[in-house]
Length: 186
Image (cartoon, rainbow, N blue to C red; front, side, top):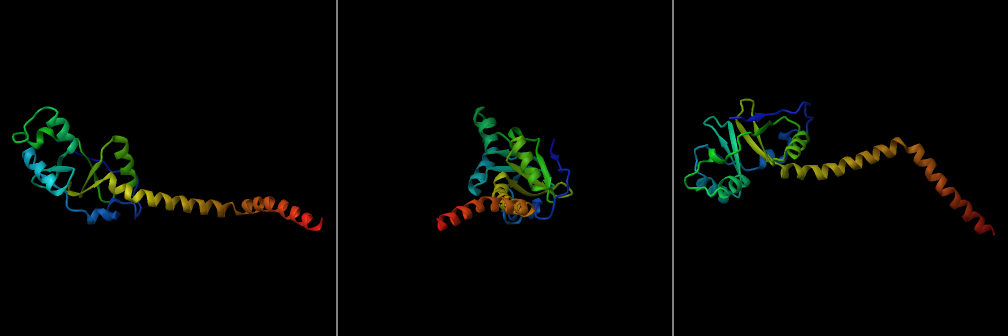
């Protein structure tokens, strides 16, 4: 097993931790199965629950791997393997990155994007699976947040540079007032 728990270096601020995402508590529990489960059984459950992956866990609910729809396509269908006889352990991705609930969401979004994976198992201090978050869970946060941050940055920049903005506005308006005044006098 080569499951990795990678904690981003900086301490996450409240509101930016994985646990602060509404999806962290609102999502259905992750679909978990043992490594010895047959692919056919996993696919049936994935289809029934409309899940795109199954997390492979041991008896203590510690992450051993993940099987995604892509794994099934590449490692089962493309290799003409029989789902009724192939075990999840034979097609799972065992090099799984795991996070903790207090990790920084934006750090993980960056890591997931750079390393090209979409599902992030979140484990407790003992390494037991707590939740699985996806890039989609993060995107629902990032667009509204980025717009809010841009608005705040714009306000802060405008207020910090208010004297310069005021002078610039005066320089633009002054010629109009002078032209208007001469136009009314002439």
